[in-house]
Image 1: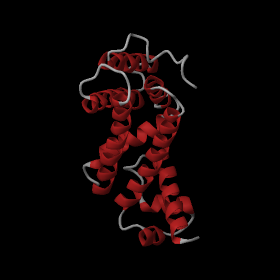
Image 2: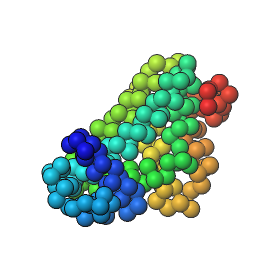
Image 3: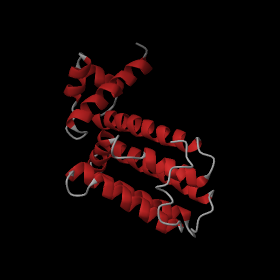
Length: 200
């Protein structure tokens, strides 16, 4: 393997372990065992475990972002792009990804690299939503603040489902999120739930 391929393999192994055990419980020894190699190899390519976990989280979150962005770009209108955003950003199919976000936020205060990655990705998601709002015909005086509020509610409720499972039903979470976004953007009730004009 080239150095780049080796680093990518380490990140893949770290992500596999983290999905099973959680980011905070993933160790260098776990990653080495996953790869069938020694811990020294991990240390050769990464300065710290924080860097390994940040890279693994970055890959997973980046792939989720690309999926959402691709679905949104397939739509012709801002409303269609918003519908696609909420349809793809779904806890039903990505529960393990939300668990990684929950782990990353829990570990961020102790791991600088993971914190920096988490902060950067939060802004990327917020900007995707804010740009869509700015380019649409919505009743919104402050798209940036609105995007932060919608995203915070979306993440908070989704993580509630992942962490506690039976506290709030998934269908209820979807209903609340869409209703809140419609309120923030001056849309009629049900406008975001109606996917008849989208490609999905």
